[in-house]
Amino acid sequence: MDSGRYILVTGGAGYIGSHTTLALLAAGERPLVVDNLTTGFRDAVPAEVPFFKGDSGDAAFIGGLLESHSVEAVIHFAASIVVPESVSDPLAYYKNNTVNTRALIACAVKHHVPHFVFSSTAAVYGEPQSLPIVEDQPTSPINPYGRSKLMVEWMLTDTARAHPLSYAALRYFNVAGADPQGRTGQSTPNATHLIKIAVQAALGKRPGMDVLGTDYPTADGSCIRDYVHVSDLAQAHLDALAYLRRGGKSLACNIGYNAGYSVIEVIDVVKRVSGVDFEVRLKGRRAGDPASLVASNERAKTALGWTARYDDLETIVHHALEWERKLPR
Image (tube, rainbow, N blue to C red; front, top):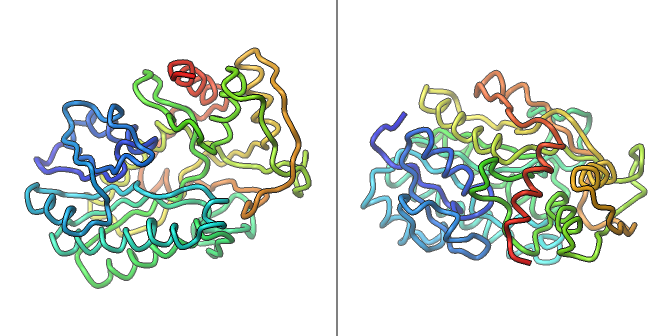
């Protein structure tokens, strides 16, 4: 329902941000996109959506936008997301993910923006105590990426107590797939997402792929993850916004399917859906990876009213393949 005010989408030219921008448009909302195009793509943002190139942590730039536009909510995606990179360059992650978000939250408070939807991560849990992971399980991230996001959750909690700002921190599990209509998808050539890498291997865009770790305490020794379709994730942001508009209390919420697949199982599905048998090399673990991450999604369903439409690994792979076929080699 369009309130006549804008929804500021930071990182709206990126993978998840572009899908959410499309979902906002379809729902009659007025998205306003900010992206520095470091990993985003200008053509992923529909022409009718106001677009501003810049950094979400630039207080003067964001403050100017909030001065000139009536903004009801911020949906914040802009972040660095590669776990091994966060281990090798932690200060860059604390700068981009934590310091920049602190500046964005301060701008939202200064300009009386009432709602904030934050792109958090399952990495805030670290090695989970039990599966599926529920939101009140202790948070103990094991890499700088997860810590950089958890710090933002803390800032939002404290800010919401001190100011009239309500927030939803959505803890994503493994995001995959592409827009079913083929309008946008995961376009970064050197992306680290498993399904993206596997469909590139199936299409001959890379010479096979590596399985990073075969000695985890799982059935086949490879990591287990909960894969959520990017369009279902985008819908969760709209549901979170509607929840906050209804006066819902600030919350953290998992977004996943409560179903886990191992790396080797995912590769087998990609081979089956694509009809291509590509080389798979077994390698050692990479830094900072928990063995298993599977979401409890009860809170998303009951509090936000979220319903998954694409909860099927073959469908997710099919959409990822169709999008990858559109991209240049």
